Every structure is written in C-alpha cells, then in structure tokens.
Image 1 (cartoon, rainbow, N blue to C red):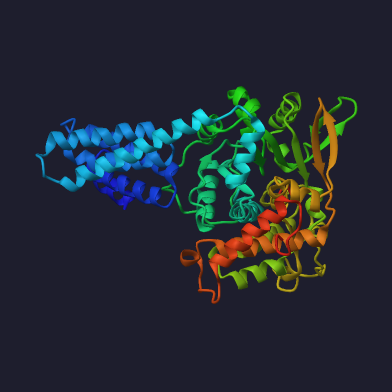
Image 2 (cartoon, rainbow, N blue to C red):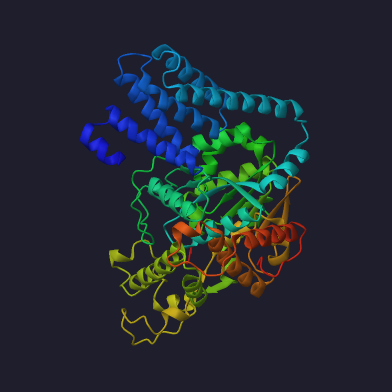
Length: 525
C-alpha cells in the first residue's frame, strides 16, 4: 500500500505520509519500534511541509503515533513533548466537547509518558556503580546481552545460528539487543535477517545495515530469495551506538558470525564505548597464538578473516590491548561435529514451520550450487572464487558422501540425503554461554596482557552437542509465532508447557548442568 501510494501521489503527498504512518503503527504494535521510527519521522516531515497551517488538526493522529513509537524506543521525554504538542494543537482547533475522545487519548498518553519519566528517573537515582551488580541484573532479567553480526544469505548456517539464538532468548539465557547484516549487499542481508527474526517470533529485536565487509563486489545470496525491498532499516553503526550508550559497563557480548570490519569501525569511531561497554567478543573464524609476538593472531585463511584481514588484525590486537576477552571458534571445530541432512529433513517434516522448509530447500540449493561448481574446469569463470583444490574428490570428503566417479554432475538423488553439513555459526552462538562452552567444547586458553583468550578447534562431547542443537532447532520452531508461520497446525502442541520447559532448561544450564533436551561457512573452502 505504501509503494502504491508513493507511485500514485508522489513522495511528498499527505496520502503517502498517511500510509507511512499506518505502517509505522503496525510495526510498533508488533514490537518493531526501531523499524517504525524512521517511517513515522518521514511521515511527520511530509505533513509539516504539506500542511500550510503549522498546527493543522490532521497532524494530531500522526503525532500520537510518533509519541507511541518514541515511548517504545525509550525516548520518554520526547514522547511526552510530542503528546503535549498534540494536545495543544487539538485545543487550538476544536471547541470544548468537539472530538473529546481525541483529547482524552492525548491526556492519557501524556500521563503514561509522565509516569515513564518518573520511573526512569527513580531507576537512575537507584543505580550504584557496581559493574557486577549491573551484569547480574541483565542476566536475571533476560539473559546475557548480545549484539550479533551476520552475513546471512551466503549459506544456511547463519539462519541456523538465529534459530539457536531464538531458543536461547526464550530460555532467558541470551538477550539479543540487535542483529547487524554485513557483507555486500549488506542491505539485502539485513532485510533477510529481519524476515527470519520475524518468522521466529522475535520482531522486537532490531536489525541494522552494516558495512560491505571488505568486499568490493556483492557476494551472491544464492540460498534465499529476498523480496522485502520496502523495509527501511537503520544503519548498524547508529543502532550499536545507541545500544552501547544505554548499556551498563562491561555488559555486552559481541558475536561476530562474519567479517570483523563492523567491529573494527566501532573501535575506530567509538573507542570509549567499545572499551567501556564490551564484556567479551565471540568470533567465528580462526586464530592462533604467536610465540614470537606473544599474542593471539587471526588465521587469515579463514573466510571471515580473509574478507577484511586488516580489520581482523586490528580487532584481535585492540581486544588484547584493552583486556577484552575473546573466544574464537575455528572451522575445524565444526568439522568435528557434522550435522546430517537427514536430521534437517526430519526437522523440515516434523516442525511444519515455513522457515524450517525454507532452510531445507535453501540448503539443498546451496549444496547443488557448489556441486555444479566443482564439476567445472578450474579455468571456468563459473567457479567464482572456488580454489582449484575444490574438486569432486574434495566435495565427497567434505560432505562425507560416496559418489560414483562416473556419475553425471546432475545425478544427485543417490547421495544428497546422506550428506553432512557443518553448523559453524550455531557453534559460535553457543559459545556465548559459559555453561555450554564448558560442557561441550575444549577451549585452549592463552593469557595475553593478563586476560584469558580462548581458541576452540575441537569438540569435547560430539554426540551430545548434535543432540543439543537438534533439540534447540525443534524447540525454537515450536515456540515461534505458530499461527502465522506453520503450514499445517501441529496437534497437541502446548505453548505454556514449552515455555515452562524452556525456563527450567535455562535454569539448569545457567547452573552448569545439562537438561535432557537443551539440548557453512568460514568456509568449506
């Protein structure tokens, strides 16, 4: 509707502004207040220009929406001022008794905004500068706060990570404050992340557009079709800055499932916020300790580090200099924990969730896309950046399949179901939680400048970890917005019992115990 009105009336017409206001109201009602804010701000800008009278009565409904959005993003004082302005415009345009319902709505919103301001002031006065106290409060209220950087769309692995993230959020173990789409085309990746989070019942997690990830050319998004071109998302740098300014000292975990350019730019542009607010950094990539330099250095053969090697070197160097702990998960750890496509097919068949079906289909598409590439001669430009060593033999070893040497490139039925995939980013996500790390992984510790930095290149409890992740994937889909995103209603599902189970599992795991259920990238090349 917004697009139709823009084409029909133009981008400066009140009719287009009205459509923007309605869309902003819808976004705000489902928890996507950060997405609603730029829409309603654009709406207000158009209205103030289009209406010759400064205090035109038609501005009032938009002011009320604007105030609601400001309240949702925590701008209580601005919301109060906006509601007061709506009240003043109403009184200047209507006699007593006229449109009395609108005036009452303004006054009720003014009172709520006043209460929010008083509450925030009281909380600020009660704050004691005790870092450990702040961090405990965060964990108790919603889990460890985390900002996620993802190059979603290049393969299905990042989507698996977001599904695991959704489960951990439901269990009050992790609290995602934002997801940033990085690597060109970063705007499309951000929109895809928005769609995935919405389908998992996380519309309240804001999404931002990150950097190009060091890639001059767009890296193809061959896994998922993304047609959400109308989403107006904020820049990741602005979103992160807002979050860090409001955060307690040493409270935020950065989870990087992609290149490190966004974090390096954060260090350059906001060095004070980075050193003051970041608790630790978890990286999917690779690193090793240099005895000669007495520090941890990134593995530049890893895909993520190779995208922006200078940024990777800077992030590792600054974290060690600033005494910010890092955990690096290498691709060899993922190779230690294969996930069979048969399990993925089972997830697709049992969950009846549209995203589960999309993941299964996208994974099949990605594997066949790679299979077609390895069958091309090394000189063929259709191979893209695929190294010469990645041939049919490499493919069979990597995916652990047996393919007859005489089989035609398009003959896939006999081996596709038996192939394995590697959940690199899901493993990195689990390493944001100490209890999971201690239970399933075997990190190597390196003390630099008095701070412990961990490198994970193996899995200590393989079978248990695969079962854990499989259970998390099923649970995340079961707890998602079932009515809107399932293909067929699953009989006998009990949301309340699942929520209670999730809370119980979270409690067990935060205490370091293992509940029964709690359970491709960096790259294959």
